[in-house]
Amino acid sequence: MIKIITVVIIVTLKGVTIMAVRQTSLYAYEIITNDGTKRSQKEKILNLLQMNPDGLTREEIRDISGVMYSSVCGRINALIKEGKAYENAQHKRINNSGKIAYVVKCYG
Image (cartoon, rainbow, N blue to C red; front, top):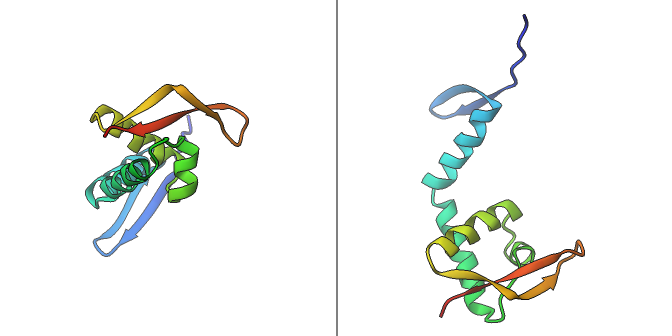
């Protein structure tokens, strides 16, 4: 039986690393966690929410901040878990896709 595995070769100053594609996602997560990217994205998003008391949808946050949508969702979820932000179920907007989007607001 032949098994095909897709690999990625990563060349850094520390050497060459070969890993399966699934591992690259974990590697990227480790990098953004360790280099402060997650923290700075979360701070940027929290600042945006504080400057917009009526709240913003995740799509609006993406458009304003330039942070990828998937990262916006992750940082918003973290802010909600930390008790710094919440989704306002009564306040919804129609996003660019024509779907209902919940508005996220920060406490305070």
